[in-house]
Each structure stands twice: as C-alpha cells, then as structure tokens.
Image (tube, rainbow, N blue to C red; front, side, top):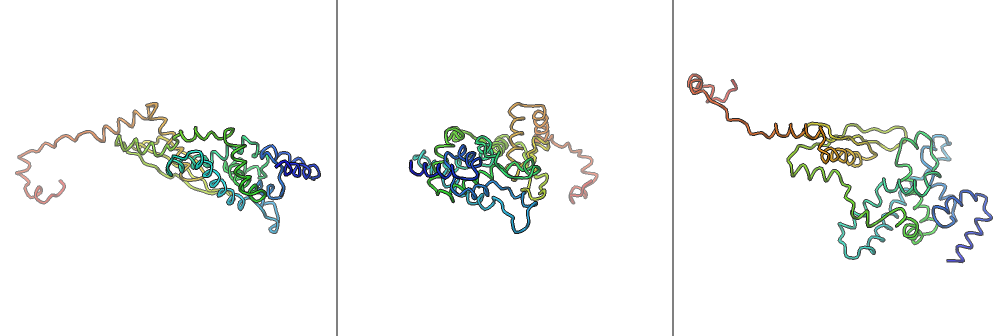
Length: 285
C-alpha cells in the first residue's frame, strides 16, 4: 500500500494537471491514475450543446455504472454491520442511504459539486446534477482502481463523517406511507394528484403533485420523480395535521359533515295514498 501511494504521488508530481488531481485527492483520499475518466464523470450532458457532434461526451454511462456499484457497496457494508437483521430492514436502510437527496448532500459536503462541468441554467434547474455526478465518480473509481477501492472510499471517507448509518436506520421519512396509514385509521379522504409533468431542454423530467384531504389541498411537492413529489406533498400535509392548523380544522368540519348520520326521512301518509303509482314505479318526483 505504501509503495502504491508513493508511486501515485510521483505520478502526481510529474503530471500536467496538478490542480485537478489535488482537488480530487481532497475528496478521494488518493491520487487518481486515469484522470480522463474522472473528468468524464464530472461532465454534465448540457455541455454537449456547445460541442461538435463527434466530440459529444457526458457522465451518463459512468452514472449508470456508479449507481450499481454504490448499491453493491452499501449492501456489503450493511450486511456485515447488521448480521441479525432481516432483508426488509437492510433494504429500507440501503434505500435511504442511496436516495438522491443523500447523494446530493454528499456531493456538496465533499466539495465535488464545485468540480462539476455544466451550463449555468442546468446547474440551477436540475437538483440531481450533483447526485448524478457522485454516482459517476464512483463509476470512475471502479474503472480506475476496482471494487475494493470503492468500498474503502465509502468506509473510510463517507461512513461516519457524511453518513450516520445508525441514525439513518432509525429515521422514518416515508411521509406518504404515514399519511395513508393515518387516513386508514381516521377514515379521512386522502387523494394524491399529479398536477403536471414536463421536461425542459435536456433536463430530467419534473413532476408536481399535490395531496388533498376531504377535498382541500394540504400540500404540494416538486421533484424529479413522481415519488419524490408525492413524498414532499405528504410531508407538508403531515405538518398541518400534527400542528392541527386552521386547514386541518376545516378538513375536520368537512369530514364531520360527510360522516354525520342522515336524519330519517319523514313520510306523509296522505301523499303516499294520493300517488301510489309513483311510489311503486320508483320514479323520481
């Protein structure tokens, strides 16, 4: 290991792109060998608008590869950390560790976001750029050093400092599930609606959803997947419910009106006698 680090450092000293290698070293904890693959990992597809056709290149293939490696590494770590836990628990924790918001945060905290190459408009519009670049970075590490280095990077550089596994395992952030469970217990009408879906330029599709309780809009959510937008809408709705806001009180009134017992209909015997054919036929009067 010492010989490897010394060799990598010597390559760094005689390289022509010391600044880029130094920035990667601060993130990775080691000097990259195949620098070109790391540069590719940081290229967002929005740059292709300004390149000739034959020079188009972006990080989407590395993102695809990195996504699979991350899932394998996190599964490996969780499998050994929780030897007595069932598949459902491990899957739930892994899902929260690799979700887009977590990867976005890691990219920001490690400084990776500062190295991403993209157009200004895409950087502000698509909040997935940083998370996607992080996945591509893991793909680059895999191609440059192999699986063991990817595992070591997660274990030594991310776990503990940027990801608290025990804390993640205790968190319950499935707001949609909580809201549905609440509605089943209380019998309130809860409806999720997709308000709009569109794609701008080369960006990922965006979704805007809302959740209505007893016909009242309790929350809206914007995201880069339908699931994300619904989770954010449900989170806002749960906030109203927990605080018992004025909106919640209005929903309670509507619920009580909807579920109030219907008063028995008073029947006039004389009217029934006067109109026997109408009652027998069931015609609406």
